[in-house]
Each structure stands twice: as structure tokens, then as C-alpha cells.
Length: 278
Image 1 (cartoon, rainbow, N blue to C red):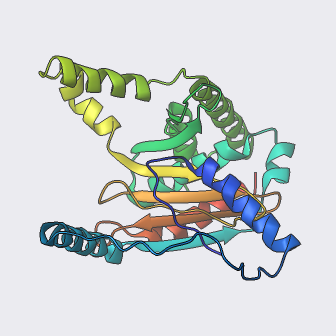
Image 2 (image 1 turned 180 degrees about the vertical axis):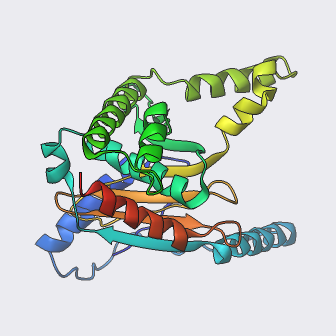
């Protein structure tokens, strides 16, 4: 079963709850019969010529983008949550490290990266941003480089450092202690109230920080193998992933010819093979 949804009204966790309940109901009740009567009626709206033209243009624009979107997929059974917990490292931190390492091997650069953290602890909370690209992941990516690999004990220490930093960032984000939503609110309110942009929002570093090449998100459930979404910039990746007890799965969405997901997935598989040896 597949499910597609538009994102603005809510987040993946909300949809996953709905998906889980459909999955559980389908197991309990294999057959759904017809229902007599009811108050269902077909809607037959009357649309003006201008609106019909706008709808047709929107459909064509959407199809143009959709048809250029490409997906590549990998499933790795060399490790999972059970193995990583024995090493005393967080499974999500290792997933995020793997994406950084794969992109380093693929493009030899470290880029703007995004992972959402739920702020459901707060009324009307949606998400805050976790920034997975850190000094720790950078050091680990370079140390694991096949051209000049570090020693095994050094690699283990680097993995634990990455996990510790990622866990800290995740806790802070979930409690509203990130910086992305704060800066977004400042930029939005300043533009609305003052008009002229503040210097920080015109700084090249701020633009680079918010050019998200690696946009990532995870949903894990027995009812779901992997969730996916499009890249948010032309030369980026949209990476949906899930870590289970004994295996790991990831899907990379991208727009050729600006990017090459086949090569990225190849590097990601190699990274997982290397990590499984630690």
C-alpha cells in the first residue's frame, strides 16, 4: 500500500499514525463490504474559464517537475538498531553520519543539511531543525576516507563523538532550543514590519546555511518500509530513511542532470559496509 499527501497542513508523524491505523485495520478486517444508503453526493463545481486555465497551467507545471524527479533506493542488512545500541551510539546519529560521509565521498564537500525534530511537546508545535552537518561528522567523514583511513579505535571514538553531539542537538531542537525557526520568525517579522532586510539575512553565510542540499527525514513503523519526498533545491537530495532492528533503508530523490542519486546510493552503501566493521 502506498500513501501520498501534501505537507503544509501537518507533518509525517501525523500521517504515520493514520497509516498505522489503516494497516492494523487491514489485518483485522481483510474485506470491506459496501454500505447501503448514506449521504454521499458527487460535487460538481462550476469553474470560470480563467480558473480552468489557471488549473491547467498549474497541472502542466507540476507534471514538468514531477516527471523530472528520479528516485534511487538501497536496503542494507549489515547492521541495525540492535547492533548500534551494543556500540552505545544512537541509531539516528549513525544514519545522519552515513549521509554526510556518502556526500563527502561523492562530491568532496560538506553542505547545508536538514533533519526535522518534532516540537509536539508544545501547543501548536510543528518542527524545529536539527543540523546534522557538524564538526564531529566532518572529522569522522575525513577519518573514514579510504584514501587515508584512521585506525579502528580512533574510528570508534569518532563515532561516539558524533552520536553524543547529534543526541544533544536532537534534545535541544525538540525543546525549542534550535535556532532555525527563531531566525525565520525574525526575518519574516522584520520584512513585514520594517521592509528593509537586516544585514544578517543578506550575509552569504546565511544563504549558504539555508541552501539545503541534504534534506532528510525518518519515519519508522512496522507498516512502512520507507517514506520519501523531493529534493528542495535543484542539485540536492530528498532522503527518506528508516532504521530497523536488523536493517537500514534509504531512498534518495533528485533532479537529473543536476544530481546523481545512483552514485550517491552507491557511496552510501559503501559507507554502511565500512561502518558495519566498527
